[in-house]
Length: 307
Image 1 (cartoon, rainbow, N blue to C red):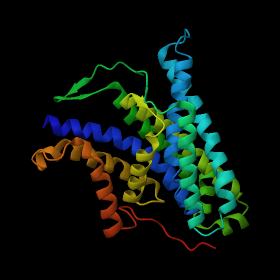
Image 2: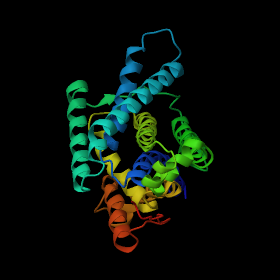
Image 3: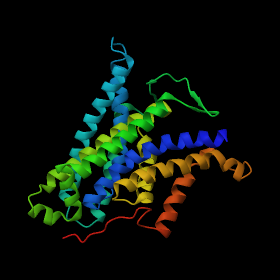
Image 4: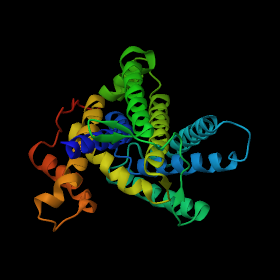
């Protein structure tokens, strides 16, 4: 029972991170029908920028939590600028091109960001300083750290805030109108270029927060960390129903739980033949099963005719 509860805690923590990154994928896809495969690298940039700021301020007289908060804020700003630049330079000129062109461009941007990060921060793994005390709390025999609690609570608040913004604000209505039919939205006075750029900026801000979260949870950051995280978050978005915000949240949490439970019990299920380091198998097995049996995801997607 303790092992099961421990894996549930680990899965909720991991799933919260997946959900935040998956929201970036699903927001862009919902409006443009584009899979932004460079999104995982924006997560990586957020983590490494925050780490650089934290290290630069480590010798200052500021309290540790203030330093970390400042580093996270700088990372959010940098990633928002990066997301806006990617949309303006790489995707906007290809908005009406065949779908293969922006897909190849997204992969190219992903590789470019990885190589630039490697040149700037190097190939080595960087230790992320502890944000909160590392001493765990005991919950019915399982342990949970303050960082894990922070990740789950903060991710929940961000997802709730994003839902309210999309459903209850003027900009949210403009985003929903653009997703429904960009041509008609433009005729109704919606500046679709501004809406699309804002979507990239918002998704990049979520990616920066997710990057800080995953680095704080695992205690490391490196130039290649966004690749696998991005693929898993994409899997989560597909699982929940890409283009659907609640679906991305549900898919992220479910994928985190599936991966954590699989890692905890794969050794017993295979008689020790496979270890917990095969946990990635579960994520991509889920992707294959969803694409085969329910391509629209668990919560589906509203499909509309685009002009």
